[in-house]
Image (cartoon, rainbow over all chains, first blue to last red; front, top):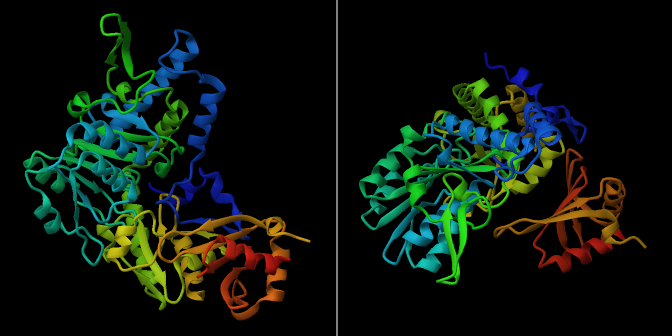
Length: 408
Length: 89
């Protein structure tokens, strides 16, 4: 049975006091806290298995390589990918999207082509495409957002044409928490021979994810938002597309052979097999192992339980926030159509003031643009405050948050 | 004479149109910094003794009892430093 109070015992940081108050961590959309199982796995790796992977014949290297490969396999299982060849370890969602932009976009996009991006995207799913469009000359079209922060599917669908080569969309908005129907978007994109890249940074940690069912071509997500360490993330890609793509970075690990050709006076290079073709240099071995442990932890709880718990907390918080007369909540009103994130503002105060006020009571929330400035322009907001929940948050914490909000 | 660096641990600059500077005072110096500032600036409003809305020579800002302050409508970091210098000297 799902028990957030029992789960809390696994998170050492939640025992902390901040400014004399018990820590209430409501900034999970920025990063999650880590259970002792993940912390122990990281320590265990460095104490017992640390070696470079795929480099040496000695025992430690073999053991480290096995663990690192196992991590790919378990993450593939977690999102129902075909296997580890579809799982590329990167630094995080941002690097995953940049990988697609440069390894696929640089070689496949040209003048007259179009890439569709939505106005609710995090900057990491906007800026790489804007940079690349200046190099390759293709056009970016932005799909609109409705007043409640949900995606305007009519706007998006009207933009997709035979010129469209890629549709970039977040599964869950990092500002409003709105969940997008990426399966529907992938279907329409495929009808026009376009690919889909889904930013899963706010969905994979919180919702059951099945890439075969969603039928998306790429899915990017970060380990640190799902109980894992920072500096590790994942790019899922359909193997048939990854096979055709050029490498992202060059170096060790990503090559099978580099041989000097006397005739051409240059090197002939063959790429390594997937996923290593996209993992140049010594990878973040320990990060991958930490992420594997995080995924094991989440699987043990059950992603359906994670989703249900956050949905209940969101509904409860949104209902209680109505008691605060000065508070205005943005985004979808129906908790079932969103995912654990509530943006809001307090009359006459900037979001930073609200965050600093809550901080003095030990309540950690985010303030500002949340790296999604275009969406704030749609909402006509200078900035917003944001609470975001995870498995260890409780109704009692929401009660404390509401009491402080009422004081402002 | 004390300098700004003696009291300030970090300065965060917020992004967007609503540019602001958030000052985080050094943990072991925050009480001293708050006392100095409250002596020099005019208190316009206090919320639960946690937020103080202050004015110092026409510059409005908010000071938090946790040792943070937020300054808006300043032209740049030089102007911020100049105000902090006067408040903390």
